[in-house]
Length: 260
Image (cartoon, rainbow, N blue to C red; front, side):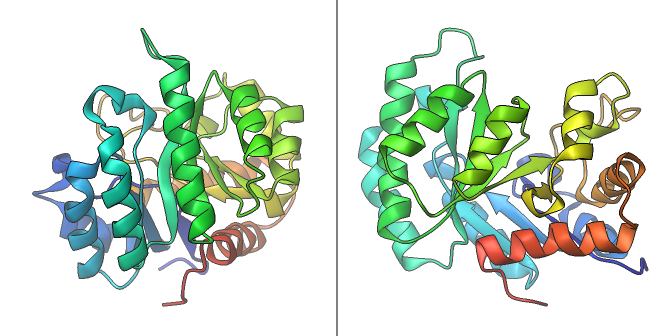
């Protein structure tokens, strides 16, 4: 067992690809030093599955939200039951929500409308948000300012610029770093992870997605978060114990997670 512990702030542990191996995956993650896992919901039809799986494991928390990559599967009528689920279940955040202007045929107007509606729900419940943002950081930052959103959250798989990172941090957000750090040619992301204040960084896998370098073509797993940590240690000057402790504290404080 490692002499440090870390938190996977973004892991789709509920996805069906893990159905046959989930219990062992959780055990392997714990053995690798992962003390807590956060599951973000992405579609209303999956919410109960997320809730049920999180209820099995005392060190698993969950968020609920309507993901921008599944706009064709969402309905505005789902906003009311989303709000009801959030009000009646122990969610740690609203998410995964956001903007994705990378996907083919995206509708920015519809995405922003859905985002604003979910930010309102988060504000009403005094909850942070888990954000998915691709090719849309300026629009996201503008929306957060317009909504006067002050609950903060995590920008999952951050891929923006240094100035965008600074603006998110000023708004109370942490930035999520995962498997991309392990790619030697990911110079921009590696440079940001090396230079940002450690207090603004959280770790994630996005399992089963966002595979690490050398593991392309296979489902990502929460236990591989330890490899992300080791890569971050190589990029920074702080010792591994400090990086593990601070990135974990960042998640625990922001999402109000309880110690196990």
